[in-house]
Image (cartoon, helix red, strand yellow):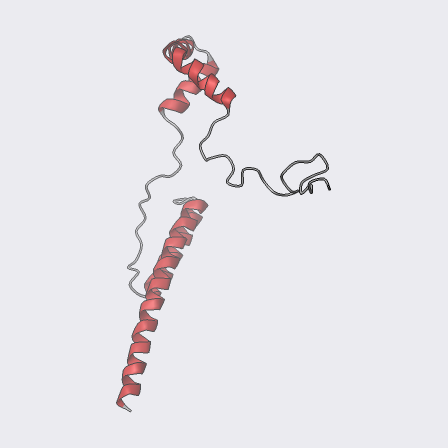
Amino acid sequence: MSAPENTGTKTGSKWKPGQSGNPRGKPKGTRHKATQLAIGMMNDEAERIVRKVIDGALEGDAVCLRLCLERLAPPAKERPLSLALPATATAEGISAAQQAIVQAVASGELLPGEAATLAGILETRRKALETQELEQRIAALEERNAKT
């Protein structure tokens, strides 16, 4: 009688090299047991912890002040923009709007990242106009070919 075939590693594991015992992996959002324990402990004392941080901030502790300010008024990731742009119903209008964005960056009215976002919006608008124009041209060609 022969020994059972070992399909795994040298140690006799039932998994082949490169094969996972849990192919789907850990579910998203699952927290480590130590993290769960720490969160549980903090939840039990959350009110006292927050009170201590606020008291420290009121006493002038710079770290506590920073914590309070970061939580009360986090830095804005984006800001509303007010920039007069020409109409974008035509390719010429889109080109003029792009030029206005370049000038706004040059004069300091817009940050480069904001300009890139606006330029992306204008590019999407340009592609939509281009698609619409091509659709109209194809329809006209099909209509002309149908008549002949």
